[in-house]
Amino acid sequence: MAAERLVVIGGDAAGMSAASQARRLKGPDELEIVAFERSRWTSYSACGIPYWVSGDVKHRDDLIARTPEEHRERDIDLRMRTEVTEIDVAGQRVRALDRESGEAYWTGFDKLVIATGARPVRPALPGIDAPGVHGVQTLGDGQALLDSLDALEPGRRRRAVVVGAGYIGVEMAEAMLQHGFEVTVLNRGKQPMATLDPDMGALVHEAMDGLGITTVNGAAVTAILTGPDGRVSEVATEERSYPADVVVLGIGVEPEAGLARAAGLAVGPHGGILTDLAMRAVGHENIWAGGDCVEVLDLVAGRTRHIALGTHANKHGQVIGSNVGGGYGTFPGVVGTAVSKVCDLEIARTGLREKDARAVGLRYVTATIESTQRAGYYPGAKPMTVKMIAEHRTGRLLGVQIVGREGSAKRVDVAAVALTAGMTVEQMTALDLGYAPPFSPVWDPVLVAARKTVAAVRGAGS
Image 1: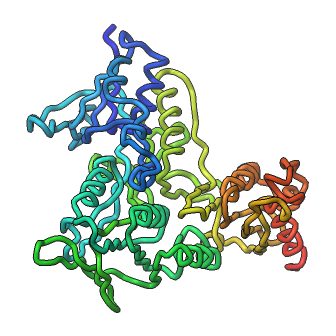
Image 2 (image 1 turned 90 degrees about the horizontal axis):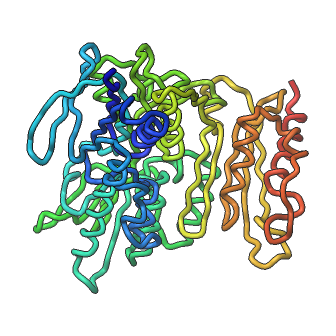
Image 3 (image 1 turned 120 degrees about the horizontal axis):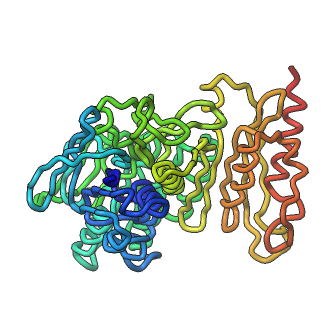
């Protein structure tokens, strides 16, 4: 019998994890694998790009987990600089365009994996495509930004404007600061880090100010202005303009699901492909989708959401590859855990914010505590703030947010496990967490927050 053919669209985390896992389970005599990637790189950490740009990661290749050559050595027919432009579901084939030669051709499939990722939000503003304006979604974007920085005249005043104050925005603000720029962050929201509640975002704002980063909230960008040389010179908002030698866009990303939508596959309210627990596209037996192009189930809210993270993409790929290769795997959903940092400030969240709880009809209580990430008497003890949200009456944990210094952010993992297990805040108070003065006060801040939230639940009445 002829081998089945698996076609994979997208050569990064989800796509190549799926291809690699399928290859582990089935050899080339059983399963032919053809993968298409439109860029020059595969299997790299997009999340690491801000740290490469900042200089914390020294070399671009340090972010690459597996090269095209390494994939090909595993009998995966990986075609680089080749973009899939159409999916013919009924005909079980895809149309691909070789960007180097201009050749377009059809390739048939028995099984298909869609892992097209996400695209950066790039508003249709005057001057948005001017030299000196950069996104940071791909390795190519990161290289273009570094080249742009190198091209600036040495010795002159250097000013960077970062548009957006989410994860990418604050990380790129730090990167520009480390390159010696005066940094201004323009944020449309009330506070930076809209993934936090505003009261916790205010702590991030305060810390960024302390680092010398100017954060302007409520600032809607209206245009990118250019100088006589055509290069970016200012960023205009409704109130005023800000001088800029370089502009970094950190506004966020959207699912790259246009191919799937055009092919008739179901997409969700956030624009991502909808899948079942096995990561199959809804309604299609032999089509799977994973990574930043899909929506996933929020286990706390009970709704789908779009979360672009390499952790999820790699898990999706493992599940897909197992199912394609004749094994079994499912992806049950997420609780929305994420961490970031700006210089020595660590930022973490998991579960629901207050507005998320209201949006799904949950009544809740909150508690916020201030502690230290180590015993207060131990050298290096620094402030840490924990906010906890629990369901009214039941005390079921709904969400946790943490802002603090070194050693703070990864404590959110305790809350992520508690959310996944459906624990109440009262149950959390009895958790047997590790303790020693260099690592924690005798009552860990997460447990202190849980105790205070228990009291809020009991005091909330009916």
